[in-house]
Picture (spheres, rainbow, N blue to C red):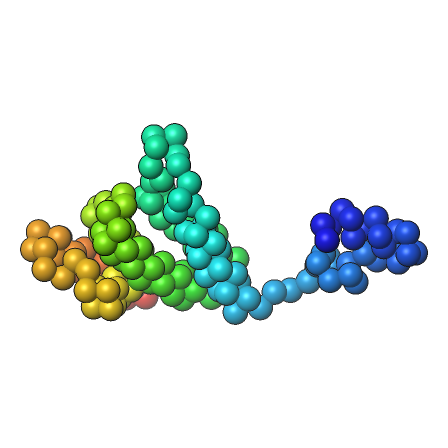
Length: 172
């Protein structure tokens, strides 16, 4: 039942607070971090399932655009979390792993692929652990030498940036 219909039903039944009907959260309701993570993973799956067969303006769905929308969602979820850095790193790694799987699936089905620059950017932003796992799990991008070299350089750049941020924050 739609929320508007539930509110109308609650008014008919004389319920003063329609939030007790279950689908409308009460003001001040606190959500657990695990429900945010589960909600993010469900949104990743639903966006992929809904958009994989839809045509875009150019005729093909741009998986690249879907990747960046999911990245924005991951940043948003991590910003509202009490442990934003750790949740953000976990989400970017899970998202990178899923993107490698989606790219492997697209390669097998002859669908539009995710550009290598997007895969490299997600690794550079901290998802390199998920990228390494995705490469091994899906056997994807393990032999292509120019990509491997750039990927290893992005890992080194990410580690150097983390060490520099740590040194600037705590080392001086």
